[in-house]
Each structure stands twice: as C-alpha cells, then as structure tokens.
Image (cartoon, chains in turn purple, brown):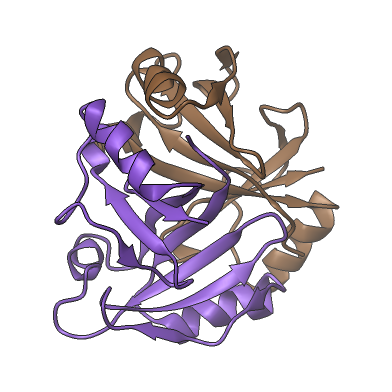
Length: 134
Length: 134
C-alpha cells in the first residue's frame, strides 16, 4: 500500500526566516509561499531531488498547526506524507486493520490539488502520517 | 550543498512492534534489525521507493535517543538525513555560516558505513539534521 515519500513537513514559526536558511545556508531550491486556508497553513516546498521538504506556517486563527507550535515554539517535524494509488482503498484497508483516520475520514484537497487524509499518530509510533493519492 | 533525503528517522520504544505495523499494516519492506552500539541504537530501514524510513530503538544505557523517548514515550520523528558529496566541505561551510555541529564536530560512521554528522536542531527550526557523505 505504502508508496513513495511525497514530503516531510516541518512546522515553523516564521516561513520567511526558515526559507532563507534552506535557500541561502543549505543552497536549496525553495518555492514561493502558497496559502492553504482550508488547512490553516501557508506552505513552501523544497526540492531535494528524490522528495520534498514542506515548511508550514500557521494561517488564520484556527490553524491546524497552532497547537504544535505552542508545544514546539522553535518549530519541528510535523508529519510525513506517503503516496498511495487509491486513497479510498487505502483508507478502507487501514480502517479494517483498526487504524484511525483523523477528522471525518473523508479526503480533503491537499497542497498539490490531490486528495489527502491524515492518520492518527498514536497508531504510528507518535508520527502523524498523511496519505496523498497520486 | 543539500543532496537527496537519505532517510527520515523515527524513534520507537519497541522496534519489533513498530516493524510489524510497517510490514503488515502498511505492506512495506523492512530490513532485519542492525545494532549500532557507537550510536546507542538498534535500527531497521524501510524502503519506500525514493528514500528510506529508519526506525530507531534505544540500545545500551547511554542511548542517544533515551532522552527523546522520555519526552515522547510513544515515539516520534527524530531526525532527517540528507546526503552530501563532501562532508568536511559541508561542515566547514555550515560552520562559516554560524551553524553548530553536534558533538566534537568530527564525522562518525553511520548505519550505512559512511561518515555522518549531526547539526544543531536550534539552527534548523527544531529539526535535528544528519548529513551523510555518499
């Protein structure tokens, strides 16, 4: 079921400052910021050749990463995103194995315009897992 | 400077249980456990096609991940590892930019038998960064 690692997401308090570290100090290619109001975040992607790093900054008053940044004010690794061929089949198979889907269990549209779902970190050793249909 | 993402490391309290989740529930290929006494961990790698997930379990009394698991008893994302062509050149360039290298600043031998270094998470938005020379 598990496909390629689409991205690793890192929550940051200041997207401009974080982008500058990756662009200038590490010499990486960083995209322009993209606002995702439905997810309560503004994102940039960093292309590292075989996968991407996604930097997330809170957007709006009910950002999904506000709580994470309260606990980790400097930022930190927030989730990993794996690609799946069929997100509904993957969801149903995971549910049948007793894994919990976050929210209402229906895919939302993610940063790449594709359907995404999040799995409960307690079912994956404290790691928040996103699935994205490719 | 920044090369491919070699792996994402996830610290886990029970390597056998965590391996079973990835192998059975997610259908992924998981290697046999490998003890790395110099790093105080036992590791397995999960091949996800374009990169790897490394699961880390504490080994010995002075494990480098013991403190992390005390704060995160269920486990969690521990570090990301990027490939670099020349680890000494990368280290010297990062030091010149004011970035801090953990430990004594000299490469150790990592899980793949290659030289590795760790960078201070405070310089990378709360993310522990490993560099591995490929």
